[in-house]
Image (cartoon, rainbow, N blue to C red; front, side):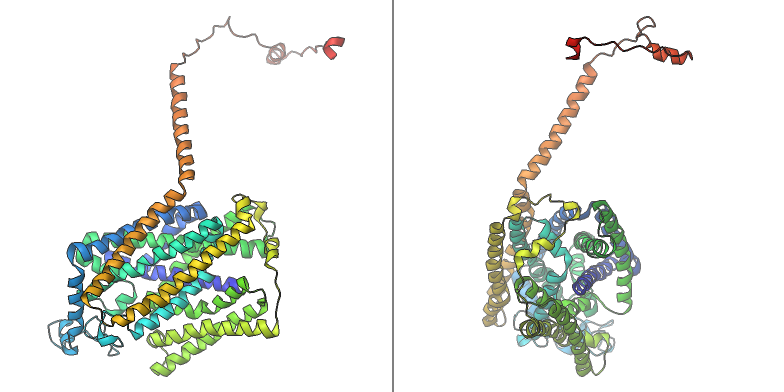
Length: 569
C-alpha cells in the first residue's frame, strides 16, 4: 500500500507539470483561457490511450518523439546557424551582464525612466534577465561555477531518481520489453533524452537571455521561454512549431502516466483486493474507466494548483520532497537480500515527514514567513530534497541491519507473480533464461554506472577549470550541443526501425498479400460468367417431406433399408 501511494503521487506530480506548462503555453500562444486549456488537454490523451492501451502508447511515443526532435534540431539550426552564431550569442550574453541596475530598470520600463520600471517585482527581486547573475562566477552566464546551478542540479537528480524508481510508467515499459532491448533502450533513451535539456537550453534558453526578451521569472517558471524565443525568431511559424512540440510531449508522456495509473488501479487494487478472479476483459474495462477519470481529475487538479500560485518550476523542485524518500528503500528491496519490508515502509514515511518538516522550517528561517515564494527558493527546496532521500536511506539501513534483518531468496520471486489468465505471450525461453537475464543485468549495470559517473562528476569537473568560458570554449560547447541533438534525433528515429525490421517486414508482407489476394478475388469474380436463370421445368424437385409440409399433408414414414453384411462391415 505504501509504495502504491508513492506511485500515485509520482503520476500526479508528473502529469501536473505537463498540464501546468502546457496550459500556460497554449494560453500565451493562442489566447485560450488557462482553465479551459487545462481541462481540454487531457482529452487528447484520454481518447487514444483508452482505446489503444500500452501498444498505442509505444507506437505514439515513437512518432511523437520523432516530431519533438525534428522541432529541436530546427531550433538549434535557426539559432546557431541560420540567424546567429556562437560568437554573436557569446557577445550578447556578455552585454546582458554588463548593464547596471539602473540601466536595467530603464530598459524594462514603460517610458524609459526608472520610476516607470517593472524590472523589480513587489518583493524587490529582479524579474528579468539583465545585469550580473548573483552567485555565478564573475556574474556571468557563461560558466559552470554557479551556486544556484549546483543546487538545481542536486534537486534535479533527487527528483528524477524519484520518478524513475516510483513512477509505474518506467516499470511497465521495462517489463513489456525484451530484457536485452530494455537494457539497451533505457541507456540509449537516457543519452538521447539529455539532448532536451542540453541542446534546447543551449539554443532557446541562452538565446532568450542573450536577446534580453521581456520574459519575467514567473513566465519562465511556467515554461514560456521556448515559445517566446520561437515566436521572436520565426513569428507565427515558430509558435506553431512549439505548440506541435508541446502537444507531442504532453500526449506522449501523458499517455504513459495514464496507463501507469490505470495499471495500478486495475492490477494492484481491483484484482488484488476486489476481484481476484477478474478476467483480462474485465481488467481492460476497469483500466479504460480509470484513464477517463484520471484525465478529468488531473484537469481539475492543475486548475487548483494554478489558483494557488504554483507553476511548473515550483512543482518540479517540489517533486523530490514528496517522492524522494521512496528511492533508497525501493533500491534496497530490489538489490539487498537483508532489506526489511517493514523497514522500507517505515523509512519511506519517516523520510517524507522529515523532509516536509525540514522544508517548512527552512522556509521559516530563510524567509521569516511560510509562503509560496519562500517555500520555492532553491535553498529551501534543496534541504527538503536531501532530507527526503538521505534520511530514508539511513533509517532503512539501520532497521534492516540491526532490528529486522532478512535473508530473502530472489530466486523465489517468480513464484509470487500471478499472471492474468496465465497469459505467457511474449515470454519465450530466451525471456526466461536466467543466463540471458544476468548478462543483461551486467551489461546495463556497468554502462549505467559509467555514464552516471561521467555526466554527474566528470563533465562538471572538466568544465570548472574553464571558469568563465572563452569564446572558443563556448563555440566548442555549442558544437557539442548541436552534435548531441542531431545524434540523438538520428538514433531515436532510425534505430527502432532497424531493430524492428523483421516485425515491420512481416506486417508489410501481410498487408501486401492481403491487398493482392483481394485484387485477385475481385478479378476472378469479374471474369466468372453469371449462371443463367433456371426455368420452372429445370428447377430441382421439391423433397416429399417439404412438399407435404407445404400442402399440410402427413409425411409418410420411410422404413430404413436393412444393410447387407458387406455394407454393414
